Image (tube, rainbow, N blue to C red; front, side, top):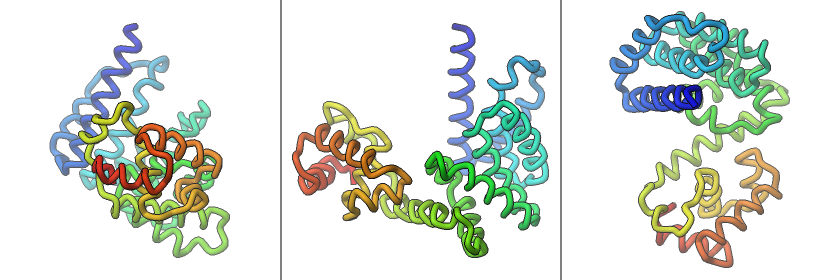
Length: 245
């Protein structure tokens, strides 16, 4: 149980640091990173548990204008994650590494890191990992796409950029109204509901979110049930009533 408690505390700590970064409070995030560096080495047996915090420290270096430190740290983390087969972590690390290399002016290496990141992420349909890095990732994707030529990841990168625009247009949905539903919508269901409200078909939603059309149909059915309606049109009206879109 102590391990579970330790993981929960680490997750909460990382969430706070990400919130500071989102709010532009680089000073608090940098103070946390400095404190983290002074903590005792957890030993090889606990390296996996420390990995999320180390990745977050890389983000802090980026936000603090220290891309060289970020690139060095992320490079060592990448090697460990690869050797252990942690694909999700490798994708996240590669994206941050690409951002760090781009900041240092190593644009060629940045493009290669991002290209590898996209190649690993596309089969699994990763979307949120890119969106969570905000405008820097959006700009880097745009630059990569402009030089991608006939890369097989071109279409995937285009979908990711389209999702950035959709999220920006939708804006953050208010959390409180969802609580009035008998069963609140999940973040993924809210994403699909906003695309429904934008007039996209199931096929277009599937392409945008890199899902199968069957999966989208499943989510739409769940959304209708939670909103207590029978059609997409009624769902959009109910969503506006609940201020979900």
